[in-house]
Image (tube, rainbow, N blue to C red; front, side, top):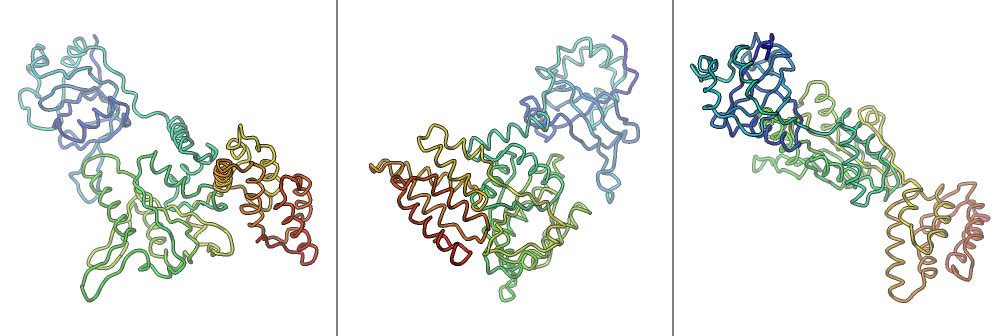
Length: 456
């Protein structure tokens, strides 16, 4: 076999190291085939395209790869912190032990056997050619699926949990997380905003923390903890502890030469309080982190917490009379996604039910005024199921639910409302839906007298 004109390098590492674990995970298709590794010797001679041999101490040769880059400084402040980027191109079915390699004539004279101390060794082209002649068929690592296949798989897992948002919504959310440290999910109550944030974190392997925002939050201490001057210590909150764990994970990942686990801090109903008041330090810190890679967040005490790139903040907001509008500086720093329940997904929940047609038409009639909601629809289905077990007809149960779950939400001066109420009356016969018809008649009268409808 002709020799490779490019240099050949052998990387030696411990069998219990992060690199050894990574190669084991790669065999199972759990990690990417690309990574980085620290080097000391030959840092000025390593070049992209060079062949790499991966040798685990005590095990032997376990993989073959290729250099993706010349050696580079991982940290500017440390002139000794040289790293290389690599890609695994083949895994041996079984490790090739030292005895087998040393039995090859040219290998007995290689520096790796003569002076085995070190991490990087140069291998002659003759030795590499001889080794290639004795290598078995290499296992081609599959690595992780393409980003699109990965997202499709995550979308399917999320839909299996019962969240019926379109796949395109998951794509948009994923891209928003990759391009901003603050993502805001807007939409009507019950559409699945918090559910999406939690489900995505679960399927993507992120650690998440869900916090319910309180209307009384006016300053950072209300949710990030506070410094107790009497005890001279910081009183942590769930949020501050979560930020500290994210920072610790980032530092540990850099030390162990691996990808850091993502951390998703989820603020539910974020605009119940004024965001620019309680969220101000974190908002500024996230902006600095995007520019510089990390940012200090002073929570009190002697040292700040570092905001690190594995941290993402997700907020959900409703736009109604109980919430505050977002300031322009929030919109400027965030990716804002508006979520809505698609009619086809709502209809999918009704497949096979005897009242599918009438409920679908009712929801379609009211949807411009009452936004479609998965939660509302599922609550209606659960109510009707329980009612039929008590011996009630589905017509009676649905009549009660249109009154209690739909008409009760009407608060509108929409000029088209009168026509929609008349359409609803035509759609629902009084013999089957007496409660709904009575309330619709009252609402029509209220509209004609006052030009406004208040549903309950």
